[in-house]
Image (cartoon, rainbow, N blue to C red; front, side, top):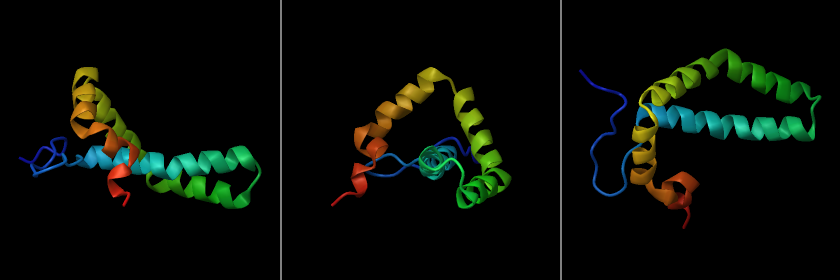
Length: 95
């Protein structure tokens, strides 16, 4: 049985697990929305985007986050060390 919490083996930089990708995508989606609401707290457009996210993707992200938390702080710390600072900051995509 495939364990979706284990990254696929690859040469070079370690691969993110599906749960890590989902949580990363949630942060990438929510941070701009939260910042937008801080700048403009009354915005129909932002309300609609937040509502759409909460109705569609948020539960999957919450489930993935809980599965990652269940792995424990030692596992998560080891994964952060394994991923390295470039992956965490997104600098691997920079030219």
